[in-house]
Each structure stands twice: as C-alpha cells, then as structure tokens.
Length: 178
Image 1 (spheres, one colour):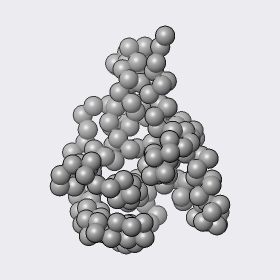
Image 2 (cartoon, rainbow, N blue to C red):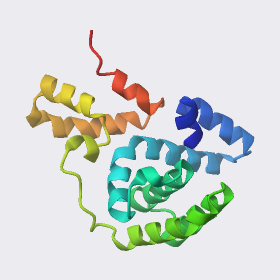
Image 3 (tube, rainbow, N blue to C red):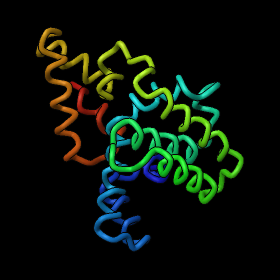
C-alpha cells in the first residue's frame, strides 16, 4: 500500500509483483489481494474511524504505520475469519518488521481499542465518507441521479469497484468534464 501511494503505482500490477516476490501460495495471495483492495476501497471510512481511535492527527503517523492500522482495522471491521487477537498480533509484528518499532505499542493499543469499540464508533454523516467515494463523484451522481436515488446506488458502485483495480487518485479523474 505504501509503495503504491509513493510510486503512484497501479494496485493490480504492484500487488502481483509483491505476491511473486514473497512467494505467496494461492490462499495467502487471495488474502493479500482482498486486504489490499479492501483497504483501497474503504480508505475514507477507515480513516474516519481511525480519527476516533488515534490521539492526534493521522498525518503525524509514518505511512507504514497508517497502512498497518488501516489493514488491521479492515480485518477487524470488514472480515470475520481472522480472530481479533491474531489481527492485532500480526499488525504489531508487521509494524516492527517494516521499521517502525516505536509505533508497535500504538498499533497494539489502537487496534485493541477498535476491537473493544466495535459498533460504538460514530458513523459518518456524509455519503462520500460512508461509502468511500470521492466527493466530486458523489456530487456528480447526486446531480445526475437525484439525491433520493443516490444512497441506493453508492453501495452498488462499491460492490462493483471490488472487481476493479487502479490507483486511488484516478477515481477523481472520473468526474472531470470538459
């Protein structure tokens, strides 16, 4: 995730490269793929939740720490096959592995807190954050479809985006009009 952001790399190409380099078997490759695309698709919502769980600004966190928190939170809130203790332990391990040893305690505390507060965090009021779509896209859809139809359409778009891959910044380009 960090490399994709830094290098503005396409998620599908970079993910395939990492899967090959790490020699992941099919099961682990499928999990890595789901995690990567799940975090990319739900990034706005994950960050909304993290702002409630992390003291201070998310901008002060190193990119690797923020991505580990997003991955852990995605697993806790959107997946049910991995026990919370395993999610937290793996996130702490990854934080240490990728060079942010000082943040391991923070990752541990934030994800344990997230697990305890599951279902208790405030939900976003705006549709762009709730469905993790760029605001210009939501505005365009609201104008074209009408506000009354918008909330029915956004989840369908989210479901469809799970099958697509690309750079997060490219989504904003969809709304540019001549």
